[in-house]
Amino acid sequence: MLPPYAQTLGIEIAPGDDAILLTMPFGQALTGRPGWLHGGAIGGLLEMAAIVAVRQALADDGGGQIKPINVTVDYMRGGRDKPTYARGVVTRLGGRVANVEATAWQDDPAKPIAAARMNYLIARA
Image (cartoon, rainbow, N blue to C red; front, side, top):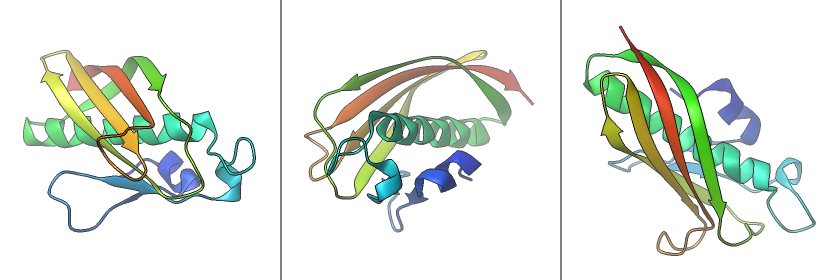
């Protein structure tokens, strides 16, 4: 279910959650400055959460392929040397375009470290 890039970042689906929750462990390969996550790793986690959310929504709606149109990432605070979590939410699933929001956090979902808004072009099956 996860794209190959997720494996590169060590991203996994957290067990036992109703909505799809992704987790990314901290590792040296994801380090920006010492002790901090690289912004690209955070952005990658957000993208994976958005892709998983839109793929699940499409599967429930008859299927289709997606192609990213754009992405906007807002970095709110630095990611520390601990596991990071992310969840994507489809805000609109149209006939040709899907709008998705994703949020990443470490300790508290109410205190995100970053958020993204992504739009995907949909090719229905």
